[in-house]
Image (cartoon, rainbow, N blue to C red; front, top):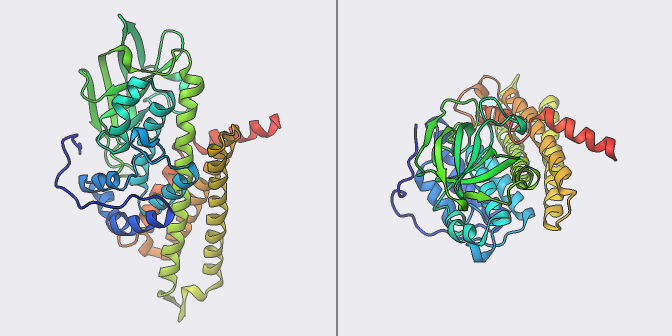
Length: 384
């Protein structure tokens, strides 16, 4: 199904801004977790929740107040994205890609680009999507075939992107394309002539993240579309936005493990097998103890990456790789165990662990697959 960019339906009561973990947990428990299964089956996030996310200041809180954000530090952002991942990975995914675009505009945009898009992105009045993957190019960015050709003082964009999270709903796309000499990044409004959005439905996991394929048929763009200096994109703009995306996915993956822990603890406290509560069985206790341990370890790794980001330390890049690799693999492992703890019930829609299992697998693929992460982390070890 396609979600239009029309004005959002119905006014919603004002909400206090979410400024930390506790407020985020309360927001998730009230507005997201109770309806997450509904979103998963619908294959979309409804407009009322998109509005509430904006009211709570969750779309891009790291932006400075002058751009409509709250100047939130990265450690706090990670804590909030963990809570969002605990409630619904699809919602967290939308915030991830939107954050990537908003960060790119803030970090690399011209004053004019910040003025045009900053407040709209901060408030969620315009939603953003990150367009890198293509049918024949995923982690290998050198295989990009979408082209950006200089035309007058602007650009002509031709090609297609796929697996674009939030693409069905986004109003602004951050598109990476092959330029005359190197990769370039372009801000492309959904309304530009030649932009076509094709919904991608019925995915394995994060089914409500409104995936789409985007086609660009000779899209004419002005000079203001270029983000960052030409020839500078592949080295800095792309790496910085991918780093923020990995950070969010790492935090959200820790949230999945936490959700599995809570679901299993609750189920084991009431379900009996062989006359005993599951919670009293050593094998079940072992599974839960591993979840507790990995939640704490993952949380520490994410926090360390966040502290390095806040300090402007380039070591944050590798810290984020490590955090994402650990948290994503832990989420997939523990989601599988959570289904096992629930038995046949865990394979049904009656319990959320089936959704956690499907969503967790996606975490091992997006923002750098497990295999790419292993190679990158090993290369760092060799350099050390």
